[in-house]
Image (cartoon, rainbow, N blue to C red; front, side, top):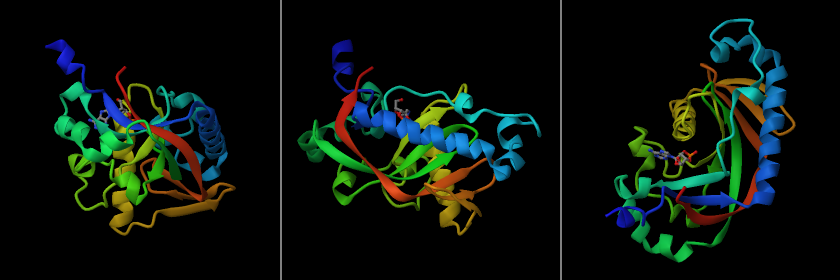
Length: 217
Ligand code: ACK
């Protein structure tokens, strides 16, 4: 019945404490503001606007999507494959409600999404489901590659896209594409991977406390 269907959440994940959410959002906004002003970005502006020369305000371009989190398992209230098995996993039950420290190692921007890459520890990988990378068609990337925080989506883009955009960039790297080094920024080094894909590898990862829990919506 409907009650049983409600017993599994929309998704499990790490939820950033509200005090650090603001800090992460600010960092992301600052990055977008700076990116916007770079000549290299303006050169590739048509990736974002479809037309050369038109201006784009990246801070307006992306819309925030709810509370900042790193999804582990999208359960869709039990309808997603493997949802029940995940919820019954020993580590998931044991760590439910526990605090973790997430390490954000990079920020990335595409014409669809802006996000932060999360580098998971061995312990955190215990909470990572079996196959989210394979589900997205990336069979040869290490487990946990998809881990991210969605910071914003372009109009009409769903947040599921953020992890797919990250996997796309990591696949290019794995195939040996170095990308075009753009410049050393205060936060780290900026690389362009074509088709509007920008990656800022952070000099110092951003460490943020987060609670492993679930979201029902
Ligand atoms: O930004 P996200 O990781 O992308 O957080 C949201 C969250 O679940 C609630 O929508 C993510 N999400 C949505 N659909 C999927 C899916 N099919 N696979 C993995 N994650 C998903 C979305």
